Length: 133
Image (tube, rainbow, N blue to C red; front, top):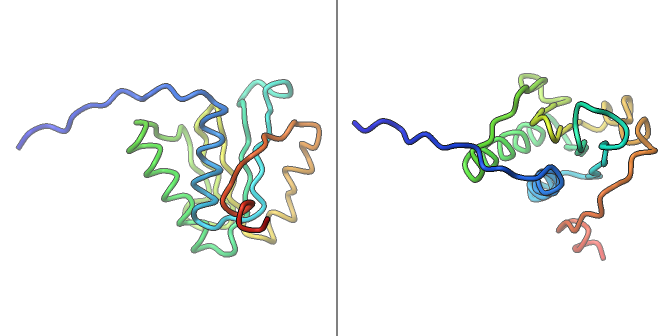
């Protein structure tokens, strides 16, 4: 049996990572996806990506796909994940980017994109947006 090949994490700039997270969430049919540029506001992250999953099952699917794709394609693992057992508010902290996946009632309760209304939003070109045009 051969040992597993060790793969060094690929450097992905924070804006590209935020866009990738948004695209993965969009492909899993997440709704109301926003990417907030936090660089001028906080020191702990560059971008917050916030999206809504219709239910816990969809939130888990989004979490699982983001985890798989960032690990497989870029050798990246989150520094911290919270909420992955309940899947009502999943937080995936990749340091430069933090993904928040909410079920609708928690998205409405915490309103992170309203809390950080002064944060510039990235223009995202997502399938959901193209399909509704």
